[in-house]
Amino acid sequence: MIEKPGDIRDLSLAEGQRNFVKRLRESSDAKIIVVSFGGRPRLLGDIVAKSDAILIAFLPGPDAGIAVVDLITGVTNPNAKLPITYPKYQDGGGVPYWHSVSDQCTGPNDTYEPLPHYAYNQCEVEWPFGYGLSYTTFKYSNLLIDSKKVLHVLRWSSNPSRGVKVSVKVKNTGDRSGSETIMFFIFDENRHVTPEYKRLIHFEKIKLDPGEERTVVYQLTTNSLWHVGPHDDTHDILQMGQKIRIGIGAETDCRRSGELCSDSISLEMGEQEIYNPVCETACNLLYMKGCHDNILPKACYATCLTSSSPVNVDEAGWGWNYVNCIESILLDDRRSDANKCQDVDSLCRKVLDKVASAEDYSSSVQSKYDYTTIVVSVLAGIVGTLIIISPFFKGACWQRRRNEGDIEFTAVNQNGVI
Image (cartoon, rainbow, N blue to C red; front, side, top):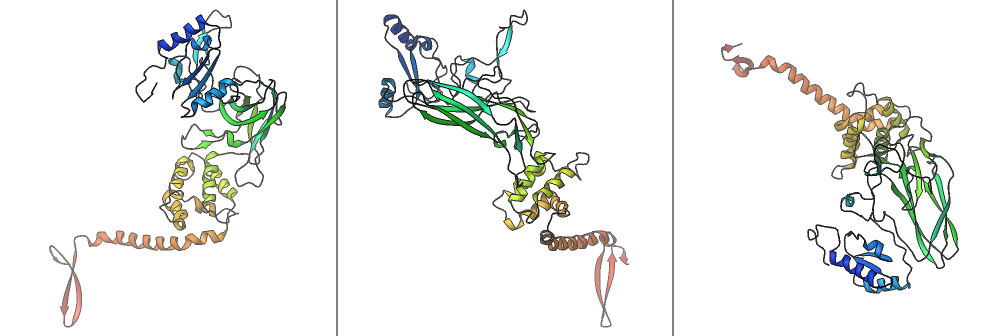
């Protein structure tokens, strides 16, 4: 079937195709293998129960026939994983893998409580994201973490962030070689903004012979914990005190069970007692673009922290608006690099002047701005003087008169000479 945008309004397979599989099952005991070609998932309905195997081939290209024959006959051992959540119902097509923890469906209450007669559960799907079978089987065991804390330090720190080593054993329990993709998912427990139900942070494919066992190790760092914060949707932040769990495998749900799930891991600061995502983002950008020169970035960070009080917005508080401003200047390729740092001071806020008074700031950096400051001050003084004296001469003009070889200037208005 040829698929184009707009020519399929219903994800269900045609009734004739479903009836064809039904009649085959009723008339024969042979193995039924369904191969589904298409650019989008189609609702298979009772075909799943009536078939012995299903191969979702999507749009594999002109050599698809050879590849399908090799997979079905066992020449090649399949090892792929679904890149999507495969829907089971029409209304379930809108619940993809990447969905909010609050996006759930109602279902029967299995706790035997009289009321209510329903409960919120994960929406039922045909197969979850990352699902896939093989002609062999794999067993996961011994999930371990070497720490319950992942430590974050600022980018300019001499001490690196300390991550958490996550390891799991994988064993081929079948009778033939095969490849398996080990997937590590994060489950957030206490985020300030609504988290995803789960998030893939790492995957690794290994090949194992029958009976072979291998330990797969992943180093969890703060790079996997950045997320959009509650106050600004254009920058990712870290949340100190955030707790997460690591789950292994497509069907693992650490929100409902502890199988193949780690203990809680908390995010904490490694060397700074106070963490401010605005200060870190701004100082990182100023530092990377050379606006600090010999200054230690920690002086910038300290200045930001001490001026981050929201009491007087004009005098203190850098804020995400300041970050957006310096980004619009420092990341603008149309501006000259030599003037970008000065433009930040003149167009955004004179933060660099405040940082210049910090103990760690080099005096040579400030000299770059002295000449410009003097010129601007002199021009401002001249303009201010002209503005002050101009009312005294409003409506007047100057008349030049020659008198016995001398030049005299007389102010004249509409009523005569003054």
